[in-house]
Image (tube, rainbow, N blue to C red; front, side, top):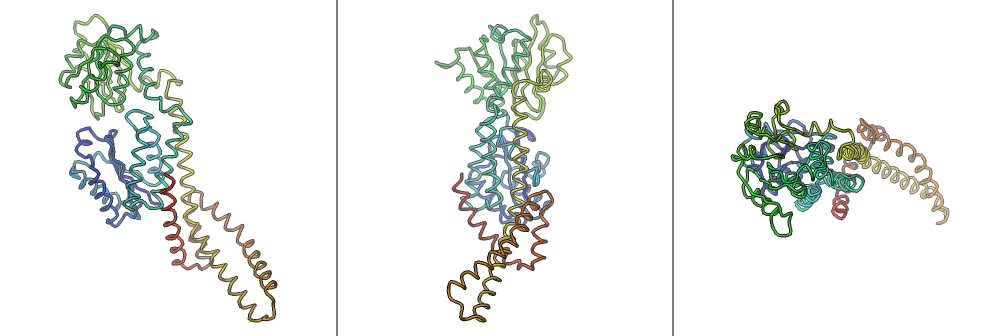
Length: 451
C-alpha cells in the first residue's frame, strides 16, 4: 500500500481560496482521469465539499506523486500552483488512512461530529467506481471509512458534539447562572453563517435573547439564517443580517458576540474589541468557537469582558461535553487504522499464498498422473484414495507455514514475507501477478455491492 492524499480544507486555506478552488462534477471527472494518466498513480478518488478538496491516490513514488497530484489539483481547480501550494497538506500511508477515518467521523469538520460528510465520502467512492479509478485499495479504504464513521455515530455521542459545545460555551459565559436567565433580553452578534454559527444563533434564540445580528462574508447566507430565525413557526426572535464591515459598530451595541467562521486569520482584533468597550456599563461576553481562533487572544487581557474560546473550554473541565466523545472517537479511529493496515498487509501476501497452493496442487496432479502410469492396474477407488491422501499430506504441510506467514505479514514491517515466500518456493512472479489481477477484479465487483 502506498496511499497518498494531497488536499486543502478550511483548516489549511482561507475561504477565498477554497471558493476559487471548488470543483464541479465535470472537473472532478477530468481530475480523476488525468490522475490515472499520470505515471505515479494507479488509483484515484476525489473528496470535494464546500470546505475541502482532497485527492487520494495509490502511488509508487512518494515525491513524484506529491508533485503530480499537487499540479493536477492546481490545474483543475483554477488556482495557480504557486498560490495553492502553501495551503496544501500531504498525508502518506497510515497517516492518510488516519486522516480519512477522522474526516469520516466528523473530527475534521467545521462542526465537530456532523454526519453530512459520510454521504459525501460515499459519493466520492461511487464516482471512483463509476469511472474505474478506484481499485482495491481505495475501494477498501473508503468502504472502511464509511463503516468507521457509522460506528463513531452509533457508539458515541459525537453527533451531538456541536450542539454540546455551543451550550457548554454559553454556560461558561453565564458563570453559573442559568443560560436562559442570563441571556434573556440581551442583544447578540453572531459572526459567521455556517453550521456551528447557526447552532449558536438557534440556541441563543431559544434562550430568549431580544435580538440576533448575523454577520457573514457572504451576505445571502447571513440573510437566509436571519430569515429562518424570524419566519413563522421559528423562534420568533428579531434577527437581521449585516455585512462583515458592520461588525465593529454592531459589537458596540451587543451584549454577546459569538464567532465561528472558516477564516484562517483573526476576525476580531483586540483593538476592535477594546473600542467596543468604550462607554459600556454592562460587560461584553465573547464566545469564540472557531478553530483556528477568530478572536484575538489579546482580548483575554481586557477589562470589562468575559471571553471563552475552544482552549478555555477544554481547560474548564476534563468532563466538558464533547471531550469524552471526541476521545472515544479518536480511540475508534486509531484502532480502525491499525486494523486496516494489518488487513492490507495480510491481503498483500494472499496472492503469493494462493500461487503457492496452486503450485502444490500442480505437483500433486503431476505425481498422481505419474503413479497411474507406473501402476496401471489401480482401480478407480484406489486412485481416488491415493489422490486424497497425497493432497491431505500437502495441505497439512502447507497449513501451518501459510497461516503463520499471513499472521507475520499483517504486522508492521511484514511486507517482506511475500518476497521471502516467493524466493523460497521459486514461485513464478507472473503467476502471483495473475492471481492479484483476478482477485482485484472480484474485489471491485464485491466492493460495489457493499456500499
